[in-house]
Amino acid sequence: MDYSFPRYLIAKQSVDDRALNRVVLDALKNNLPSHPLEIIEVGGGIGTMIARLLRWGVLAKARYTLVDEMAENIQFGMAWLPGWAQNFGLRAQTIGENQLRLFDDSRDIQIHFRRADVFEFIESAPEKADLLIAHAFLDLLPMPGSLPKLFSLIKTGGLGWLTINFDGVTTLEPATDPVLDAKIEALYHASMDSRPTGGDSQAGRHLFGHIAQASGRILSAGASDWVVYPTEGQYPAEEGYFLHFILHFFEESLKNHPGLDAHAFENWLALRRAQVLRGELIYIAHQMDFLVKK
Ligand SMILES: C[S@@+](CC[C@H](N)C(=O)[O-])C[C@H]1O[C@@H](n2cnc3c(N)ncnc32)[C@H](O)[C@@H]1O
Image (cartoon, rainbow, N blue to C red):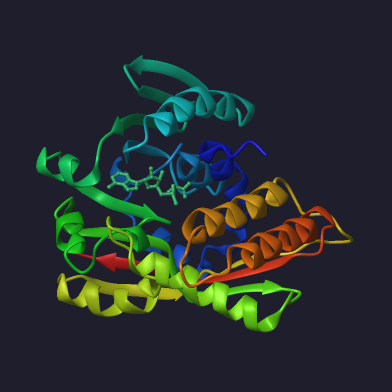
């Protein structure tokens, strides 16, 4: 299989669409100022959140800076987003290097894709945002130290929408060998806690404390679990690819793990991949969303 990270982010869209907590989303809509918004999205990937916020009628006039460290994501986003926007009925213009404008009579979004490490971006002292978005990102960072730095990107009184923060539960059904399933789940979570670049397998629950410590006020919080399941043996949209990619994450994180029998793990991966191909595998990941006021 060809494992392409941008294609994984495309496939993840429909899973995230179902997962995002609607109470937290409503709080975001109710608290957004009406003037043209200055938005910064960190770890923004290829720009699927821009498309989602347009689809959901949340975005109308904004300057949107998307920061991501992967050049491949920026390149993919610059190619993908204009085509997506045109299908959606917006005009798309390139207005500079890695800069796009998506617009019609009532909407105007100026997007700047910035390829940068988020902490280097923060050090460049960019203009502060009305809204900071971190989607499927905070559980990859060293905490609690990263949060005050990220909050420095927000104007006083501005908002942080911090979504899809993993929170310690992975479920794969049906079981293969329950003892091995539990062992692999535990080692997978432990691998998130020991990445050299940071990460927390219980980021969701820990954010309550970290946000308070960083002087943020939680306006709304709730679960945003990924629940991927087949209907009559078929996964919607590209969710079969999404599941293969999740299994690829397991493989990358645990291959050569001293606590895991290599042959048993290979066999487990083969069984799980066969479950995806047969349209049987159900995958649940518990996550949390937050809306925060600075
Ligand atoms: C799980 S992906 C989520 C992407 C996007 N938010 C989405 O959901 O489609 C995490 C993203 O964070 C980016 N990333 C990881 N560490 C980063 C860092 N230190 N600075 C900037 N981007 C980073 C990765 O390149 C990746 O695109």
